[in-house]
Length: 413
Ligand code: HEM
Image (cartoon, helix red, strand yellow):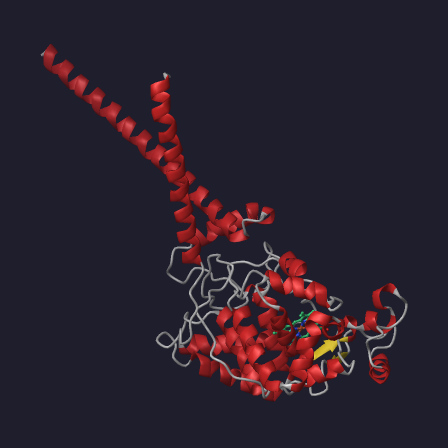
């Protein structure tokens, strides 16, 4: 190649590669934008105008049946949204090809009231089939739990889709332990774009509900391997907790997270100021200087706490993975093909999941499964085309032979 053509081709190549790069970048951005849904209030005003009323009604009944259902359902928002965004991945039951989040260490024997979400889903499916996602049900129900416990009300943004899969280790890797200290929690929340104020306000959710002895025995008897209790616990409260959770006792016995456990108020923060936090992750918010100022503020100004809590819940509800989703018909399982619909895709998908589902890496399980599905489809199309070509070829040679023979006989005659 001479210098002249080199000088022409190189910039052209460079230009082409940057154009190609830009092209792919744009496609990527468009795909990501298409996958991340825009959430807004009143999302179901046409498809299911009574959606919020239906969920509120189910929550009312569930909390009359057992007041703790409010706390347990509200907690689901935290455990759902932190693991790959608010996509109801948390609600999927395990299958032979998928170990979901329910049996992960932070969730097993701890998360509860899944059946309340099922009830809401059932009622919504009756009223408007296939319209309301399970991910949105969690968001609505969490807000309702707060309101029905005497806390603030707010408008929820809706329009989420439900995940197509879930992964146990994602929950294991992300959800914080009750042993976590404030420095760790500040860092963790910042990864989700949540501020120190958000962390303290959202921890105020422990104004309602209960925790197990399993979650606090270490701080009663052996804080940080010291062989001694956490010095931050007020002595009378410590004696009370020790009675509730003796060494070698039943780890599943529960205690109240604050002194007014069924009421959503700022008592939780007053308790922290007095060394009466139940969990280590709670009390540490008062020990650490960066978080202490918010604990103090919320302990004397309930209005400030309510406003910061609402802001935090909305911000946490905005977390999305951008992965493809669906509106599940049953919150515990991904959709199967509807009756009358071809189930080829569904079956092939199952085969692909079985073949490569266990090797899912950072790309995310759906991407790999969808790519696998695409490869299977392309191979099938190629096989079909090959088969058709072979038939055409045979027909062609048959016709050729036929014409030749016909000409031969005509000549002979
Ligand atoms: C800041 C980090 C957090 C940690 C380390 C944490 C940890 C815990 C633990 C260990 C329990 C008791 C579980 C058990 O013993 O079985 C619990 C309960 C609870 N958590 Fe959190 N949590 C955190 C943040 C949140 C957030 C942000 C929310 C909601 C917005 C939330 C809502 C709840 C509720 C309502 C309960 C009581 C549930 C019930 O009674 O069934 N937590 N949390």
